[in-house]
Image (cartoon, rainbow, N blue to C red; front, side, top):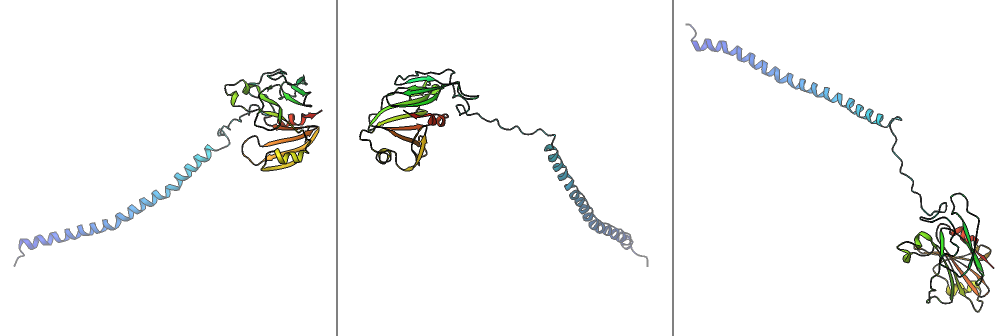
Length: 252
């Protein structure tokens, strides 16, 4: 009996289907390996990219790369080694005050004001040098301050002639208080001087007295006191030339 047509067809199709199944299975096993290999290859090239980036950074910071520009150093106008802002050369002996006499002093050294002037107060018996970038202003005494009989106020010329002159304080000041009963300086300070800080012996020019340092963050916070006869002298040093002016102070 001869096989039917359907049987013959199946005999031809079954081998073909089996071949296709084998091909599909083989492809399913091989493709993941190919993909994994490609990923590994990409991963291995990443360090090279990082190395290139590091190399570029190193090249940018190499010695032949331009160095960053350093910030310019601001100069403080009016510091001890140069005249105050706007100060004009040439002494101003009279300034705006006529309570004492002045005499020219030799010019300062390099970087210093063009000259120094000696202010001498014959009535109250003291003298002090001041630079030609300062002037002396005559202002009314503070009536609320007990026993204050005299004051000499040194102002920066530029500030004294500015629009805010009324708001400016003196760069250096000498206040004279009457001490009619001759109270010793230390006892006078106990009764009249600023409290809340330290008090230490100090030499001011050719006189000895006390330095009072207040525990405050606002200026002025430092005062010097000396006594002679029936007067107490309070010196308030501020400004860039305060130290030289302080040491030039003389009694008698």
